[in-house]
View 1 (tube, rainbow, N blue to C red):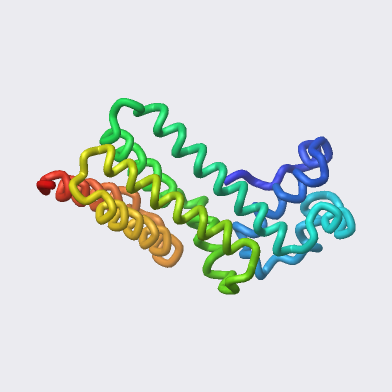
View 2: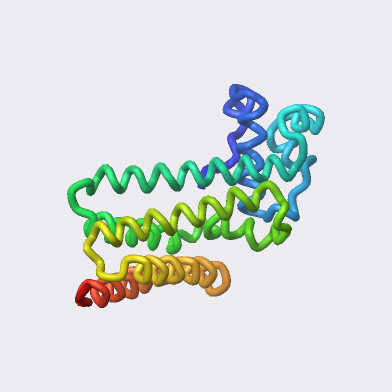
Amino acid sequence: MKTVPQSDDMEAAPPRARIVAAARELFYRQGIRAVGVEAVAEAAATNKMTLYRHFASKDELVAECLRQFAREADAQWDRLAAAHSENPRAQLKAWLHAVAGHVADSNERGCPLANAAVELPEKDHPARLVIEEFKTAQRRRLVDLCRAAGIARPELLADELFLMLEGARVSAQSLGPKGLGTRLIKMGEATIANHSRRVR
C-alpha cells in the first residue's frame, strides 16, 4: 500500500491526483464509512469545493479509488504472466507466493475491494460494479491459468484457491498475519498437487 503523499509531493501533484491518493489511503486504513470528504480534502491539501469539482459525490470518489486498486492488481497479474510466459504452472505457484506475501504483511488490511464490498451492501452504489467486475475478472484469470497449467478441473481448483485466499485475508484481520502466509502456501500447493493427480 502507498501512503498519503506528504508536503512537497502533495503540492507538486495536481488536485485530482492528491484527492485520490489521500482517499485511497484513508478509506483503506480507516474504512469508507468512517472517513468524510472533509478529512479527504484536508489530507489532500485542498478543500471540499475542489474535491466536488472533480468528483460528483463521495461515492464516485470511492469508485475511482477502487478502479485504481483494480488496475494495480491487473498489472501484478501481467507481471507474473510476463515472468512465466512459457510455464503456466510456475506462474500459478508465483501467484500463490505473491498473494501469500500480501496476506502475511502486517502493514496490509486485506483486499481493498473485498473490504469495500463489506461496507457497501447497496447494489446501486457505483463502487459495487467495480468490485463485482474486478472479482469476476480475477476468478476468470485464475481459471484460465489453471487450465493452461493442465489442471483437469480448472474451475474447481480456481474456486478452491480463490476462496482459500479470501478466507486467509479475513483471518489476517481477525487473528493476525503471523504464520498465515506459510500456511496459505502449504495449503495451496497441496490443493494444486491434488488436482494435478486427477485424470481428465
